[in-house]
Amino acid sequence: MNKALAELIRISNETGGDPTLVQGGGGNTSVKTADGKYMYIKASGTALKDMNQKQGWRRIRLEPVLAILKDKSLPKLDASTREPKVVNMLLDACDDNVKTIARPSVEAHLHACLNTCVIHLHPSAAGAYVNAKNGKAKLARLFKDETLPPLWVPYTDPGFLLAKKIARLVNSYQGKFGKKPSILFLEKHGLFITSKTASGALRLVRSVMKRCNSKLKQPRDGSVKAVQQEKISDLKLCIERACFQAARKRTTIWYYYNDAIADFLNQKDAKKMLFGSLTPDELVYANGPAMWIEMPKSKKSFSKAALQNKSKSIAGRLKQQKQKGKKPYVAFLVKDIGLFVSGTEKITPTVRDIVLYSIFIRTNAYRMGGILTLNKRQEDFINNWESEAFRKKLASGSK
Image 1 (cartoon, rainbow, N blue to C red):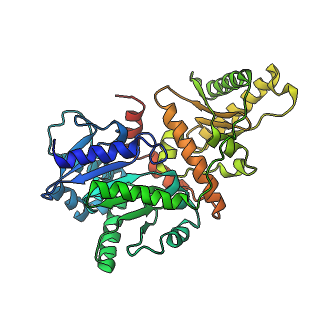
Image 2: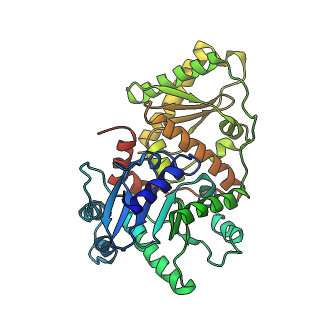
Image 3: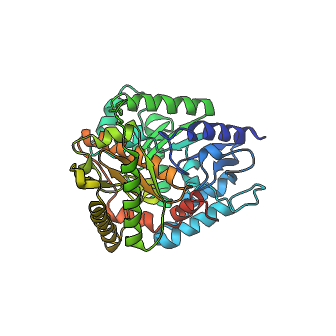
């Protein structure tokens, strides 16, 4: 097996198995060959942990990929025309024996202008800063002793425009410091780690996570209290009915509860934190933040009549989401009870992981001075971006 491919599989598997670093099919990795002609890169929609010698990657020629960034006709096109064209240009640059429809990561041109090994992750620890109103300043203080400081990348729509912006910022950084950046924090997005070697990139991931976590609030152990199975079953049925009333479509409800969920539910401002979408991943896989639900503490709150009323109330809120042109909630945080997720057995673990990622970020960004979410224009771009729809279909098991 080619050394670059072996290193790609190594860095992908090692980071992809940790849900605090990446959720679902998100994040991507790449390794350039020693001759500088090719780059092995993760295939879009593939989970990093599932990559192996036979699948989950593409080999791509670097010269035509870098030429995409210099193409002066692309910035003149509207996004709906430009982005599919770039996807096809990246596919045309592939040079391997892969027979499936696997696409190279839509961020391949971004990877091309960075160092040999690139690890792009969506860690909860980094997310706390890139989704905080005061996050940039906090990171500057956290890494003030670094000779080569991290590069901060202001929010830009993913795809071609983000790659162009990072290429410009990297060139400027290299002119100032004499080297390309090793750490890039992307506002409302995630983290890029880049190094000349796979081992160096993995060490840097661990080092950056340790430093970021050192100033963050971690969930308290022992927060979970026993919940009656009858209450869980009643709420599953209640939410299932609400989803059917809102969409006239049957769905399955799954239940999750752990210390991280319990710790968030116990916070007095938990409800206040659940607004707006943090990142493309949360918007694409979880349809935004979870719905907050409280059950009255009276003995009658779980009576048949009370549960029917609650079901109608939840259905009404789901319908309101759709009327506003937003995707309906698929995750529901019920105070003192836990997390309920609507969906298939294939996709719900991904939604669960994204909710855990989200509540950690929201808790810490809120403590830093405020949560920074995607605005409506940014949400609309992501919702209409074919590449994200493609990624979700693959993660859902669709052909």
